[in-house]
Structure formats: C-alpha cells, structure tokens
Amino acid sequence: MMMNAFWHRMWGPKTRTLPNGKTVSKKRSLTWLYLILVVLAFYYSIELTGFKMSTLLKRGNQFFVILGRMYPPNWDYWASVQGPLLDTIKMSILGSVIGALLAIPVAVVASYNMVVNRWITGSMKLVLSLIRTVPTLIYASVLTLVFGIGTFAGTVAIAIFTFSFMAKQLYEMIETVDMKPFEAMEALGANRVYSFLGAILPQVLPSYLASSLYTFEGNVRHAAILGWVGAGGIGVILNEKIAWREYTNLGMILVALYVTVLIIEYTSRYLRSKLT
Image (cartoon, rainbow, N blue to C red; front, side):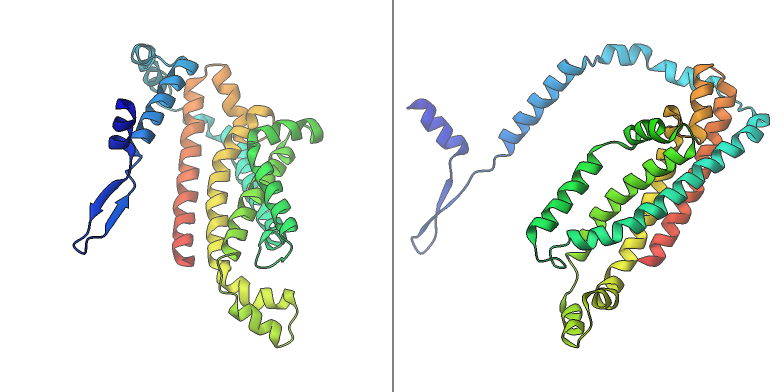
C-alpha cells in the first residue's frame, strides 16, 4: 500500500479541478525516469569500456608532447605531399559525383509519393539503411581485396557512401514536396518522367545540390584515412610517417590537409548559402 501510494504520488497523473467543477488530469513528466536510465547507461558504459579519468589525466599530456614534435613542420616535404593530396581530392570529387548521381533514380523509387507500392519503397529504404550501416573504411578494406591497392578502391568506397547518404536525403526531400504541380502536369498528359523533371526536381534541386556539396566536404576528410587500408590518397603517407615516428613530416602532411579541408569547407559553405 505504501509503495503504491508513493508511486502514484511520484509518477501518477496530476488532477486539477476547473472553475466549472470539471476535473482534468495531466500525466506526470517522466524526465526523472529518463535521467535515471541515462545515468545507469553512462555508468555501465564506463565499466564496459574500462574508462579511467586517472589514466586520462596521467597520460593525456603526451598528446601535446607529440604535437610539439611536429613543430616546425618539414616544409621541404611539401613536394612529396602534393601527389597524394591531389589523389585524395580527385577520389573525393569523383566518388561524390558518381554517388550523388546514382542516388537520384533510387531516391525516386524509394519515395512513397512517387511509387504507390509500399513494398517497393519499403524494400528500397531498407537496402539503403543496410548500406549506410557499414562504415566507409570497411568498404575500402573489402574493395582493396577486390580491385587491388590504389585510388580506384577508395573512389568506389566513397561513391557507395555518398550514394546511400544522398539517396536517403533526396527521398526525404521528395516526400515533403508539393505534389499539386506534379498532378497538374500529369492531368495535362505529361508522363511521370516529364512531370518529375518539371514539377518535383525544381523544388528539391537547391537542397539536393547543397547536400551534395556538404557530402563532398565530408568525403575529403574520409578519404584522408582510406589510405590506411591501401585505398590510396594522403592516408598512405600519413600512416607511413606515423609508423616511422617522422613527426616533422607528419606535421607537414597535417598542415597541408588542414589548409585543403579549410578551403573546401569555406567554398562549400559559400556555395550552399547561395543555393539556399
């Protein structure tokens, strides 16, 4: 009885009597319950991962020691960085373009307002979810076994990631458009392809291009680590210099990568602002 009364007082609905004599009830907030669950999850995460704050405080300064060894960067090493850096950019551009273009027809098929059959749209969305589940680095690892070591495997890995991400973004855009222009064009005798190009595409094109630029921006960062599994690009020499503890050369690689990503990020942000 006491436990039931406590539970009702803490978590039971609140009642309130209105001036007209009518009694209304409002459910109590479950914020405290959610907070307890979060705290428990946080505690068991620490236990399972073996995280220790003492170790972080004791060894964390080594990160800055390594950064200090990278300064000053070996500027003479820039000549050796240019080629792999260009490979990384080319991988990102080609993979992003291929993936973004392949995403268009798949996104149309996955949109419930374009395809009436829910089995088809549901299956397509499930396949896209499964593709997005696998990290790009895993795709690159497998593709190097299929196509061999080099930038081709990295380009295909980036294209697969871009395809799955952009297809999801695009079908969500298509499902939120105004369908009245599309229906009007069909009523006038246009087929579904022309109706899509004339009524749906203009509505989603700015957002689609902005998302493509954002994806390309992220792909440059992803491509930088694909070389760790033999997929080409700047990641190859990055992994090599870390293994050999050549910190000044590593500093030069990171400076070049940072400047490149910064330029691409600001350019992409400017173009996206113009599109939206």
